[in-house]
Length: 278
Length: 278
Image 1 (cartoon, helix red, strand yellow):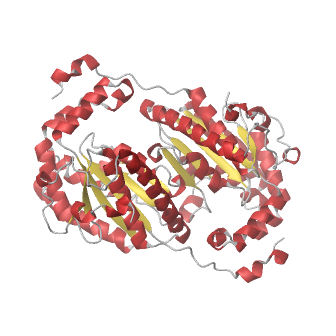
Image 2: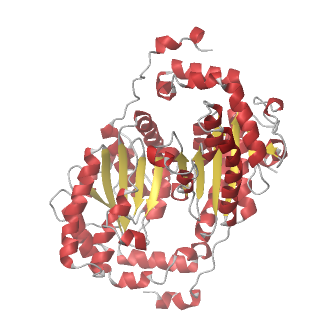
C-alpha cells in the first residue's frame, strides 16, 4: 500500500448531517505516513500519473464527469493545490473555472445560473476555484442577501448537486483549512516577495477581520451540504505536501470508484483488417 | 543555445502571401539538432518549464492572451501534441477547446460565433483543437457551403484574428503535417490496439479518400490567412519528439516576444510592513 493510500480520508470527510467542528480540526496536522516532504512529492507525482491514466479512460468512455470544488479562506492555497494536483493531467480533459465577483448579467439571474453554465462536460474533470458556495459564504457574512434567502440556498445547492450526480457527474468538495496565524504569515510573504505582490489585495485585510463569521458560515455550509453522493472534505492545508497528497487522493479515489472503461467499438474490428484498410 | 532554440522556424512558417507548397514539405523531416529522441524529451520538459514560467507572468500581468490553433488531418497527432506541450502548464491559465461538428444552435449563427465565444480571456493561453478553419476545410471539401461563401470566409477569418490581435491576443496557427501513408499506419494501429480503438471512426476512411482535396483546401487557407501578426506554421509531424519540440518552440517564442511582466502593485508596499499587517 503506497503512502497516499494510507491517508485516512475518514478523518477528513464531513459525515452527512454532522457538524464539521472546524475548531477541533488542526489545520497544521499532517498524518504520519512514514515519509517526508521529498518522498511526498514523489508520491504526488505517482498519484498524478494514476489520475492521468483514469482521466484518459474517463475521456474515452465519454459518459461521466468529475467536479472538484475547492474553497478556502484567502491564502488557503487553492491556486497552488490546483497546480500541484492537475499538472500532469491532460488539459484537454481537465478544466479549471474560477468564480470571482458576479457580473451584472450574472446577478440578473439566480445564483446557480453561472455555475451551471460551467459544469464539466462528460468525459472530463472540472475544477472549481471558488464556486456556488460563495453564495452562502461571502454573501452571508456580508449580509448581501437576507437570511431566509441564504437559508433556502442550501437546499438549492443540494438539489443542484443531486442533478449533476444523477447525470453522471461525481461532485466532491474540499475546504482547504488554515489558521488565522498562518494566513498572516502568507499575507506578509505576499507583501515582501516582489513576484508575489500581484496576489496581494489590501481588501483581503477587511475580510480577515471577519474570520470567525466566515468559519461559522463554512460550518453551516459543510454541515448542510455534505452528502453521501457529494461529500465535503476538510483538508488541513498548512503542510503543503500533505495538503496536495490529500487532495490528489480524494480525486484518485473518486475516479477509482467510478472505474471508467474504454468503450466497446460500435464497429467490428474484423471489418478493418490490414488488407481492408488502405 | 539549447537544441530547441536551434529549430529553424523560418523553414516552418508560411510567409504571408506565399504558397505553403505542402508537397515540397517533407512530413517525415526532423531537423538535425544533434540530439536524439531521449534528449528531445528532456529538452521538451525544460521548454515546458520555461513556458510555464512565462505563463505565470502572463497570468499575473492579466492584460494579454495567447491563442494556439492546431489543425491536422485525422491521426495527425493533435491530441498527443497538446498533451505533450501543455502537461506541466498551470491548467488554471490554460484551456483547450475542441471544435466538433457544430450544433443546431451554432449553425443558426455565423461560422465565427461559436469560436468567438471560446477565445481565451486575458492572462491565459487558449488552445484550439480544430477551429474556425474547419469552415474552409471540411466544409469546402464537402461543398457544404457555396464557393462564394467560402471565398469570403478567408477575409472574415483575417478580420477576426486582427480583432483578437488588437485586443492583445497573439494568435499562432499550426498545421501538423503528415503523409497519407503515415495516416494509414496510424489507422491500423488504432484498429489493432484495444486501448486505441475508441479513437477509430470508420467514417474517417471516407475523409481519407478526399486527401488531395483536403490538402488543396489547406494550401489555400494557409496562403490566404498566414499574416505577420498571426502566422501559420507547417510542422512536420511524423517524428513525434521533433513535432512536440517544434510546437513548444512556437509557443515559447510567442510568449518570449510578448515578454509579460508582473504588474506594479496599486498599493504601496511600505503601507503593509510587518507591524501594520496583523
